[in-house]
Every structure is written in C-alpha cells, then in structure tokens.
Length: 455
Image (tube, rainbow, N blue to C red; front, side, top):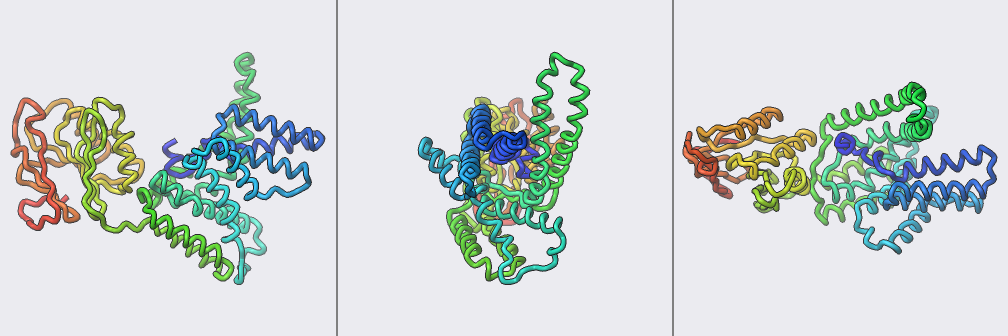
C-alpha cells in the first residue's frame, strides 16, 4: 500500500470509476453479445452495478461512477451520445442534494476533479492547433502512446492542486507509472473477477486449486510489473516533491495560468504548450522565507516540538508519548508532511524515556520511504548507559542516521538559527536519565562563531 501511495497509483486499490466502468460495460456488452435485447440488457446491467456499488460501500467515487454509467445506458436506450460533463454535473447535483457536506470531502473533490480534468484538459494537449506535427502520422502505436501520455498528464495537471492540498507531496513520475499500470487494469480486473467466480466451489472441490494456480499466473505477472514500476518510480530523482499545504496565492496563480493555457492553447505550438504546463507546476515549489516557528505537537503524555527556520529547515526535539500509540505516525509525521519537510536537519533527544523517543521508529521509517534525509540524532553527552539507549542507537544504525553527542558550551547553527546546549556537562554521570537531560536555548540570527558545531 505504501509503495503504491508513493508512486501515486493507490487509486487502483479503491473501488473507483475505473472499476465501475470496466465491470458495468463488461456486463452490458456481454449481455448484448448473448443476444439479450437492449432494454433488458440495460436494466440488468444497471441492477447488477447498483448491487455491486452497494456491496462495496457506496463511496462518493462509486456513486459518481454509477450515476455516470446510468447516463451512458440512458444514452444507449435513447440513441443519443452521453456527454461526460453533463453526466458529471448531474452526478454532483444528486450527491450534494443528499450529502451537501461531501463537497468538502477529499474523495469527492479528487473523484470529480479527475473526471473533469480527463474531459477538459487532454484535448488541450492533443489539439494540434496552428502547428500540426507530422512525425507520428504513420505510426499508430506511437500516436496511441502519445495520446495516453498526454491524457494522463492532463488528469494529473488538473488534480495537482487537490492532491497537494490534501496530501502535501507529489511524485512527477506518476504520469509515466500510470501509463503502464492503467492499461493493464483492463486485463487484471476481469481475471480477478473470473478467479473469484471459479474459486467459489474450491473449498468443496480441492482439485480446482491447481487450475486456479495456473489461471493466477498472469495475475502474478501483472502484480510483479506493478511492483517493479512503482519501485522504479519512487527511486528516480525528484520522486518525492514535498511542497506542504499550498498557499492560497499558489492555488489562485496555478488556476489562472491553467485557464489561460486552455484559452490560448490553439495559438501555441503543442510542444511549447506542454512545456508551459510543466513550468506552471513549479508554482507549488516556490517557498518564500517565513518566520521562525516553534510548534508544540499534541502527543498526550510525552513531548514533541518542531522548530522550522525561516528558510524551512526542520528540527525535532523529542518524539514520544505513553498515552497515544504510534504518535510518530499519527501526530509528528502528518505535521511534517503538512509543512513540506523535505529534510530534517536533526532530531534532538532530551533523554531516552519512552515518552520522548518511542515515535522515532515511525519517523525514521517514513523518512526512508519518502526520501526525507535526517541530518542526525543528537543525544546528551553522558556516561549513562542502559538497554533503552542501546535500542535507540540500534534504531539509528538500522536507518543509517548518524548519532552525535552534545554537552554544555556546544552549539549547532544553520539558517541563522543557533541551538545552544546548556546542559549536561561533558561526560556527566547520574543514576537517572532525567538528571542528564539535554537543555537547549534557541537563538535567532546569532553571529558568534565560538564553540559552533556545524550541523
């Protein structure tokens, strides 16, 4: 799941419009090939898909896809063409009529945004305009590949503001990854449905198991290709752009630029059109300097403090809790994502009691998976040693994060911020961890270079 999320293909794990369309049209066309008349085929398909949607929970995206499919069937019955924008608008009206609060749901926004982008933006990039290219005229495969790529890019471009607003990061390679995985869904989903049907009597007919294993071989191959595609997509340079929550001015500037691009598309060369769209996404990478920010995270019985410098460098002071489970995963990491932390300068550990350090494993695991570098873990310079310290050192070694010691008089400086250590004295010994806790002082725009340890 994490691999699919980082490669931005996790939509394949959801019951979404892609599944509804494949299943619904598959049932309808199958009935028509069996010579079932149009009206009974449409009614049976609608009933089957409604039952399927209800069985899978009737999520917002499922309801949207179901209503749009009913419009397609209505068009078949009336001998008319179903317009995607009309059916999309009708679906939105129906859903919001009964659930107005769905408008603020991420699933609603992304589902409708993706379909609207698919209908409106790909023609902008596929339209040849005043300068039609000629190189691909006689190459059907290359033309199809180009069309699929530009369609995927159009959808990605249209939903990018929503993705960043809700999830705070983007993998630019997701366009290429989806170019590979989405066409294979047309093969994978029917195979999985077939296996589900064929496998129903398997508990009472064990001799079916070898047959199922044979049928499952193409599925294994497709999942293997998915894993390899995702693994490559998350290893490539720039695969994790941590933007944080976009500012309102960034959203407005991006949408105005997108509208201008759609309006003036025919007057621009296709290649330049694509380049301008790519340049437009750079709006979300602009991060003006801000004030020094110190945030005390709500971790219950414990401590976690995040310091963000004016140039968006991040420091953590402790990360643990004894009253909340997985505080690193559910409190600290979401905040770092929200702020767009692409690098953590250092993690300062005051002492290694559970309520100060048990969230570090979640943080370091996320940092490794999301390509977030951690400059080091800073511990008090003390002679006190115990099993908890050994576990902490082993955790740092596992994730290849350097461990450094601080004592009174030392300081770390970066981005105009100085973190000065006031306690403990070098090599201090005590019977209790609290007695040798790290005590620091933050100094903004500190100029002295005495006793400065470069972070």
